[in-house]
Image 1 (cartoon, one colour):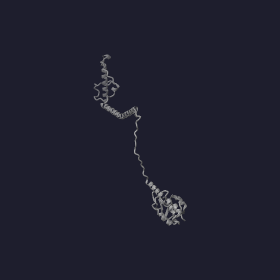
Image 2 (cartoon, one colour):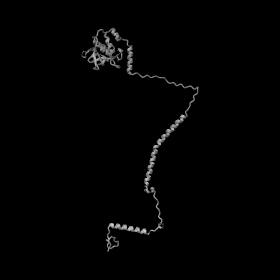
Image 3 (tube, helix red, strand yellow):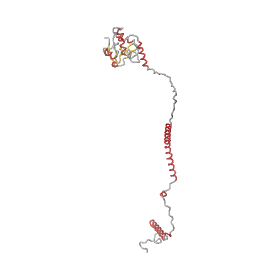
Image 4 (cartoon, one colour):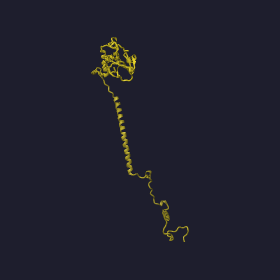
Length: 287
């Protein structure tokens, strides 16, 4: 008869032949504990009787880390070598430049310290240097050439002037149609500023010279010629009247049908052309 509270032995014929997993683990743990108790009991009573224990070498901090692979060491060496090469490449030009600058500075200091002195004898004569003398004159512009030629022609002109005609006019009575014929005789005379003879005319000098031949005195000014004459309506304008343009800055002799004859501008000649601007008005003399 089995007692209550006491586990059955392994040889108990009443225990089931199949054990559960939990019971199997418990039995293995119990056998392990029993083995340790037996070994402890068999050990010598004093520590001096025990076999000398071999002390394990103490591991340093470095030994406690896992050993590195050889490939990692090789990679580190390669990276350090490459970095050193880059630094050397960058530093070399700067070093060379600095060295060249230092050498240049040293060279300049040496030259300055060894300045040469040239001794010239007291009776030495200097060498005379000569050069060929020449002059060059730029050619004047064509307009200036034309003006110079016109001035020479005006100076060389020996014919009658406007004052001469006023003193003895060839046409004592005013005839507008005859005045137009006289004005047309001077086509091709060059424009000369201030000119009032057939050697060269400006605009008011031309009209002054023509009207003087009919005994009519005109001032040598386009604005004054316009102010002194009798203003005529455009519908009543006739050939022989004066055309005042550009606010009194230019004058010509009206020929009818919108045309006039005048001395236009520098570089041009007396010719017939249309009235070029609507800013004009007519004045009449001889009435």
